[in-house]
Length: 287
Image (tube, rainbow, N blue to C red):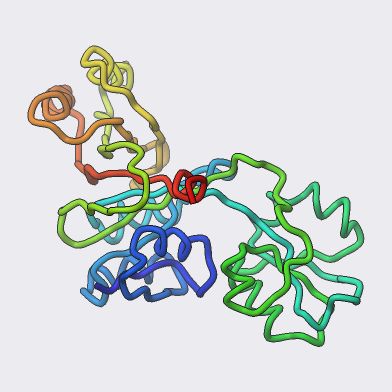
């Protein structure tokens, strides 16, 4: 089975894809939209893309493209610890590093380390941590370092000059698995964390207290919400929809009851997916 992921090789998304689909054929794509388009065209069966980071929040590009461009069912989720390292070319072990390159989020997450060890170094932003590692590998003559993960170090034959350089030890990124059909994935190996159902809710424009009514529909049924987030509908200023994650698999009574109640209030409700979520941190701890 072909599985697409946000590349290039050596990204955290590849680590997540490997954790779920170790035996499948993994194909990197340069952008999140390219990943999702490949699923829609049938070039790959599944796509793994980032959806949320514990430090930086929601990956808006993933969410907006999913809602407005490629409405693909969410069939799985996985959470991965984010562990950043400082990588250099082997020929630069004795050189003074003059520039640090990486994705802007990675540089922001390693601010304390950079201030302590490279206070005078220039910072340059790249499209991803893996592309930064690739750049360092292709320019051995330059005194530069990349902030990236251990997979990128292995992939591009780089040396870890400093390990665990991130400021926040509990940093995690969540990824979603997308496919054209709605069949949820079932993986053996990774620890299954929870089942989740994701809904998109659009409020009626002339209904006072509509959001309170929406939340009440979940509350009196004792359905736990793990996330509620607003995003613009792109139809006018002040128009928003809400993405709601429910900590429960789609059943025959409770969640359909919520949907019926919200629709009776005049809300628009769409099911984006009901799927299992896995945690790769538990697997690494056990290993």
